[in-house]
Length: 65
Ligand SMILES: [Zn+2]
Image (cartoon, rainbow, N blue to C red; front, side):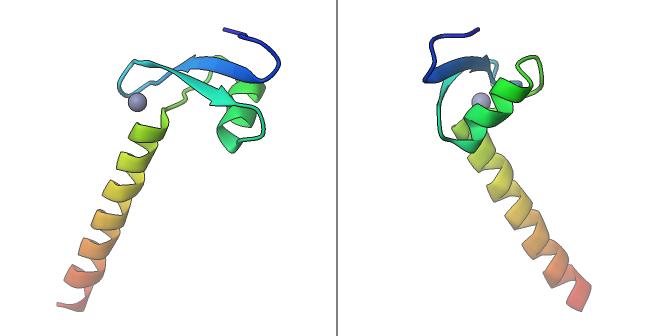
């Protein structure tokens, strides 16, 4: 999986697509520390965060009722 010193490739565990992470980013550090771990691409991470925010918002709304 090791590309060169500046970027790494990993497979997104959600969409199963290969993605590249660049040195100096948090994603790169995660992949480097745990190459066999579960990593997701920026797109899926964005979707997860969006979904979490939506669910959190829903919980706030339903909590008030
Ligand atoms: Zn993905």
